[in-house]
Length: 234
Ligand code: SAM
Image (cartoon, rainbow, N blue to C red; front, side, top):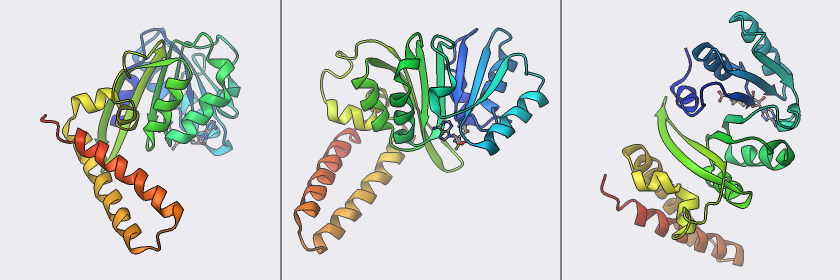
């Protein structure tokens, strides 16, 4: 059975899409999508041999060899230009997801939708999207097995309006998530706040080098931004 996290990722894939799932591991997501939608075709990309073999086995097991191609390679290098209109990358850190997109820039031509599910550091992805002509269109936050995950969906477009005000805050917390401000969002950021405050109090005990001062200043700024948002009333 597919995890709730991947079920939620799947809800953003359009009917009949041509998708590439990068870092597919067992190819559970493309298999699920193909079983749900007879028109959908997928490429499952994997850089590591073990997961690549698991993906191949799974695709054969569910009888989807004619609709899911499993390819071995780094990030978007497994794709030819224009082959897919949707890319999913799930279950990795935001830094790695952004690096995969950055390295594979030229393969993004013709891709209309990116569905990205970072386990941590979603802000790095928001910054990458913003700097590379992608418009964030939806965000979701969910909790499963005591872990909190975010899902970011983007299409090519201008994001001037989205980030008109409170840019720094929106990049860190997510413009849609901070507006919704649901209980999982509050839980995540309350926890981060506690952690940052603990670090700041450690800094106060340390010898105040220039580096410590800078780090402390930036953490204090983050704390202020998050505290402001957590005043929300939902
Ligand atoms: N996407 C699945 C999910 O969300 O459950 C699997 C996530 S698993 C934690 C991350 C997978 O990404 C691993 O199987 C790893 O081998 C693969 N991976 C990491 N870096 C990659 C890259 N640069 N290109 C392709 N696959 C990568």
